[in-house]
Image (tube, rainbow, N blue to C red; front, side):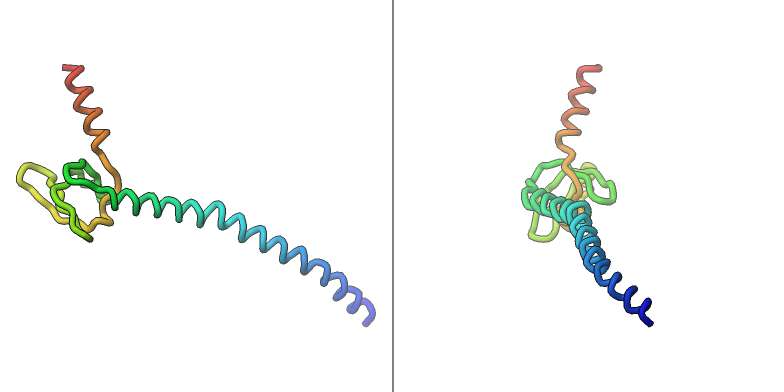
Length: 111
């Protein structure tokens, strides 16, 4: 019986170290997982709010096109001459204007 009581007293000291360990895991989880994800979501929202007519964009599905008009929740994208598609604003992934300009500059210098 006495050995059981001695073991229980020793476990009490380990409980604090377990709480500290769990706290450290939560802090690491926040700084390596949640914070970068929140930062990326904030940058995406800022990008979508700054969309302008005439920008070349790429959707999350990989569709390339030029923005024709922008509404509150939707955008019209021209993917080919005369072919217009309507997308949710959240479907726009990246701007491709700089990439398109770089490709046309390279093609004219190579010609």
